[in-house]
Length: 122
Image (tube, rainbow, N blue to C red; front, side, top):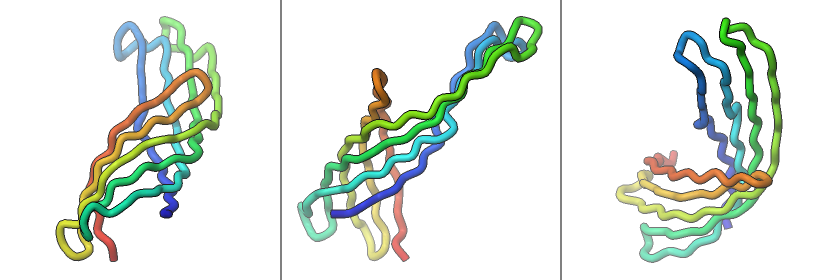
């Protein structure tokens, strides 16, 4: 079983009349995911896995009037669950590629993301 802590910064949204006069701005400061991974080798260099654990997020919402003056601000931190799966392939010594798909649940909302990348193991 492998343990993984992953910190992601990936969600931003802006709503407004135009760029100069935004009336609502919201963003996720942080998504932190702590998961345990369980999988099996298809070949000595290919792994498929499922993962699950805890997810934490922090969200801010700022409200502006039409003149661009801030009239309100709201912050919220949430904790929830994380579930996903993926595959990893070692194509050369110390080098691997991976792809995974994840679900994170925070109360009534579910966030989904797909991640792919290249790893170098020192």
